[in-house]
Image 1: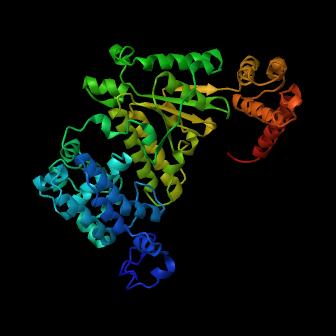
Image 2: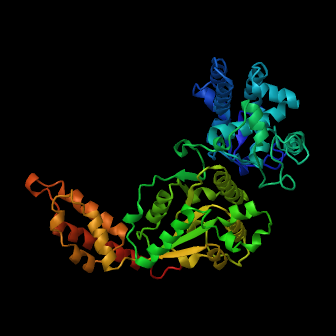
Image 3: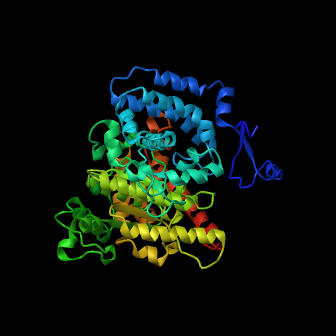
Length: 513
């Protein structure tokens, strides 16, 4: 069954299963993804044939259909592995994929479109065409500028032995790198390298000059990314209720970055010396980077403030999915972290109006390094070192939030240009927050004693919002003549919130953070 590709191991198997039968007891097997598809009546070959037989109106339409056809089989492999769009673990796939790649490449060879002429002009062989198609598919369908070395190698290889020989397609000096079709690795082929199609290749494949703006989705809502998710920003600066010094720091930062050319600090000679470059334009772009850290207890408005900054600067707000950075396979977390920053850099460099990046609950990634020697600690220390390097050179606007400032490494703490503490609001701020949430459209809100609530309960803005929502939910369920908000409603839910907060604090006592 293994030889016929009906079954495969779920993880990397370094020994020969035909000689070492113990492998079957030590590893898990899975049914081939394409066999699964046939069993449930999902005929991939028929789907590909239907797509490729469609009439197309132009070159762009043809490329779209090619990528749709490839999604039929590459997409299923990714889902079967339970992996993301970018990774494919130790899984050699060409033995299964060749039957599906062939009709796609045959359709290109018979099309006469720009991609066919591109293949002919560069005299690409079957494997080289597959590499170009994979990179094109990832870019066109998912807006991934970079594809991981392991993923790419596994898709073009039959097995582990074949993968060793296929490395020659990806090294510096290969035909694809020599002809500037794909980006060459920085040094040698190894884990951590990523590849993408050069702009020249895009220009030829699309049969026209490839606009930089098209290298990322103009509409971020259509962007598929394992690392980044757009958060809709409706917050306004005048809705941000903070102490005057905190508010002043945020307003000053926003003013500087609303017109970076006017407030460019390099004109005063304030340039980061570690950049080590004399090129004025490069210095200007890199010195425009800003790392901001918002820290404080939950519910004090850290995420809200990040949205207000993005909205006031008329920028998109992209949340970094920190949970996606963790991977159980050795070395994969480091690769994911590097790829995340590569994607951020690409978006930041190519977008006309670069977005604001938000790393919410950053303590998932940022924390103190340890001197303990173990596999897990070594991985964590490596991740921290990567973060130190990336934060040092990132030229965009990155906002990180944390509730656990004490867990941050001092070196990482210094990488943030601006550190702003979000404290529990004082009575005056609480009064304004209560007023903001007790809208005039709520029946009975005008009769609420806001001064009493502000002075009696030391709540954060997030807690006040929850209390008002709970009290209104209870009020609207009453009979018609009582369907209004009363002071007792708010006090009842405020006291419940106080009890829950006290219990949470007590649970933390005696535990090492």
